[in-house]
Image (cartoon, rainbow, N blue to C red; front, side, top):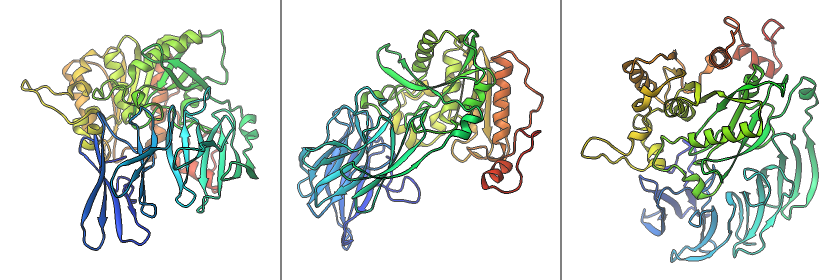
Length: 502
């Protein structure tokens, strides 16, 4: 998943000890993320034996959010994950020779996360996506399969997104399933998939009584006019089908994740519904170049990070407007944070006649001023040409700032220790040199997330779209509930907001 064994800071993801602690298995990754080496070290002598290697044309990953290889010294085997046949599948290797014994799972659809391996019964329990026909390909289901590839069984039959927790002995698992529109049902099942206990059903009656409405799952066409893309649409609760509404796209281009996030039930999806209440149609679309689908889908814009899935966002929004005539494409906006900030600026520069308003928050606008390991995984190592150009020029937003036509708000925290604020300053400098009007908000003493200034940034975002996309006049200095007050209410303590605050 990363280019070092402790990529999450506190855990060793690419490391497994033998039961007797005599040997340490680990996976090494090349700088360009194209080659992996499975190695075993002798803990007493420090001797390292290279067992096997895999090379990919673009980038290698071991699953979705979890390392999926496993060291199986008791049976002298390795459980290995690969997308070599365009889908994320499991393979069984011989630990001594490093030779392939057999492929365990098959596509279409991916093994996302291996949650339990029973070496004695030679059975694997894993979360999979996209394996069930005519279902949302992002819905997670739970499966069992034998080491030899036989006996593949769906353990969670409901057409929903399943959140799984497995018992330490693998005999039972907790299954909390839901959809974006249907609340959670939690049960306990045994390893055969049989329900042995009903645990809970989420009650959303108070949400509904307060006027809550669910997002609308959407399906639109990608840039190739063939590939299906999935996402959500948010409409105001006072929706009037006879009106035309400006549309705002909340974007995150990946490649490590997408715009819409989990398909499980959630009462809110950031501030998308709140923004819709101000008179907008708000959408998120998981474009090509994001994970959980096929390898080809994930690699759609490898080597060209300036793509940012924006061609898919545009084609998807056009398709959605054809399905829903109340969407006004002449008033299209976009916003996003971090990679979404990068994508928003790119959309405003590359599609200046389509996107009229953009809000780019904390964007990593040039990957050469960001983390080397992140960019090199998704775009390859930078290659400089004799004339001074490089394969990274196309993703540098400052190179295209002169094309801006609409209203652009750039925002950044001055103490951002993820994306340094000079990333935004590169774009500011280019806009000034191009004599372009734009807006800039620097938030002092906050990091990549805006902390106590989050509500202020949210209010400024709402104001900006109301003023420049909807043509309205936002209330002057509307005061939102403070973060501290929100936390106090959630804890059931003092600080409950009054009507004026609301």
